[in-house]
Length: 235
Image 1 (cartoon, rainbow, N blue to C red):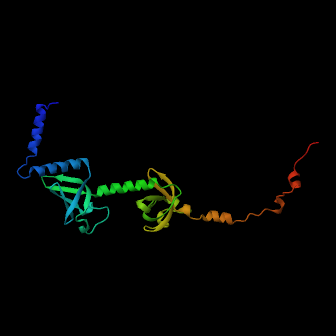
Image 2: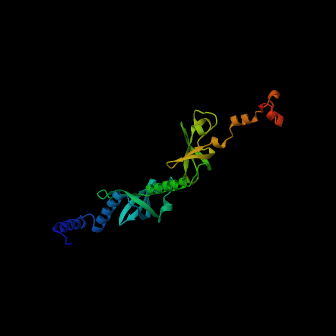
Image 3: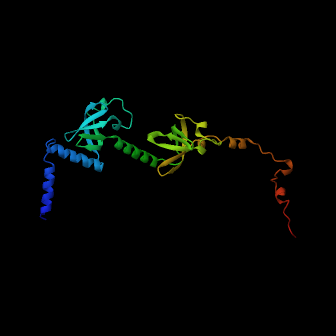
């Protein structure tokens, strides 16, 4: 199919837009255009950290100096950026402004998504009845959130903390406390946990300790005569 005059005009217009503007050369304009497209699409790219600067690191993006803030390098708090020097990072463009020569990248969003994917996979492998050792992260009026192995977490509802009724989780638990929990339900990728399911129930123990005495007048006979004494046989 032959190109129409409009197609030629469009290609010509695009070529002019990439011929440089007196301040940026053609390669730089192409790089900025790509950066803007990557920001819009959210596509992941890989860059190499080439330098350490105040507040973060810098990397080369198609000849453009890109900045990665220290807060966007990891999910963890970072005090020293030097270990990242020379390392490849998978990042996304979060800001691209050619006029202010501002290109900002981030690895944090990608890391968070992968962490969540890992959690979902681990939770999908959990079965009700499993027991975990965890740490109380936060206390709320309605229960306690407990951190579990492999980045998982779950909620112990206030009614599942103790056998006796308590008004607030803080009556029994404190943040940072290690606890054993039992998975009692898995719904919509969330774990419902119980502490009391692993605790002895005092009420049941008291009931088990009670001795049942049968009055002599109500003793149970097991002889054949005892079994037949109330049966009347008609002649």
